[in-house]
Length: 532
Image (cartoon, rainbow, N blue to C red; front, side, top):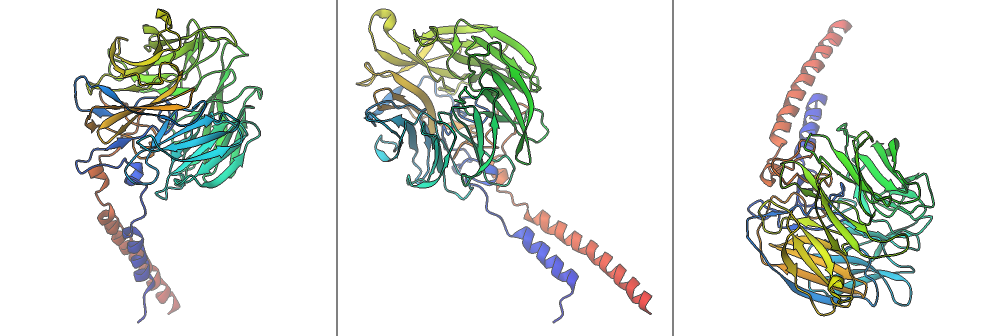
């Protein structure tokens, strides 16, 4: 039987459009895994400060539960010395249970990345020749429904591990790596690139297979890049911006077709001190994103998306931690900033002061703490976000006695984490919050190698816009005060994701085949008439 070309073309078009492609984990577009009600059931703290914009909010809005309490789930001696990095949680083996990843040093040299199960048991560890300061990123690099763990070491090596702890690839940087990591699909090819910095001022971008794609050198190679950049489309032109804080500068690298181009650079007041990680958000609710970054020159800076200074605010001490973003309690669609500063000069440590500051540079509260990371989360589902602070008892004469409290927006305590054995004589490390199967998990490492885990009474999670590997819509989740900002991408409801587009595509294919058929017969008739 002779098959006419136009019929063959029509058949091919229909087959191409009706055969579904493979969607990323959790649904189309990276939507979080959901239960039968369409609500996400888990959220993992997959990267330092939570998402690629570095905002540090736990994106869970549980139904109103009133006051909830926390109990110690476990405390485990993971190693014999420092647990340096922030605990990261993710379900990497698909069994429905979270694994915990944390970097460490070892007493007799070297370092390791530990994988710990929900009950505090070490599942595996990967040893390195130097300490592991960097906080890893856990994500599906290849979108093949398998998660990988990427981290660095002071030996300059970057490692990519599978869920079983086996090495997939490694990359050698020119200097030690303390930087936190992030992963993002810069060129929209379905595979994420890995971004990190080294201790000699170079930012690296690796392909998902571990090959160097490009690098960028900051002005001062003597300054280490300790934090991962923030990623956001600042001007809404569809090209992601990489906002990097390093040395005494903030850089905006706009990425077109995956390649970076320096868009602008802002230099802080002091040329000898470093800056924190930047955070990106529409802080004043005007529909434009701003960048807030702290500096060791004791100033907090707010820049426009064009790199112009909107305001600067002098605090008493050098900034110690990246800012955390938390929704304002007085003005909808606006955000406050929580940041910690180090008391003492160069080379000395006399404590920490943590501030909450609104967009108008008004200090809402400040407290003596020892907080190295201040997660923000809605603990009781009332729409107002609480913060976790690390405190000590030095003011009442009890040396080396530490504890955690949870404070409201006005700074008053509303809950605490019970002190377990071993907490009184160990300095706690960075804190992270995860949400899994109706409960919050709060995790903290320590300088003595103990990993602590607290668990809340069961709450129900609604409005979760991030899950699985925490990417959501390219890692930026919705605003959580009032309606979502026009600058934030809104994730579709899972029910909408399941609506098939194929009937419409089939109709379009049929219309296209009719048009092509008319054109084909028109030119065929002209050819026949011309040959007569």
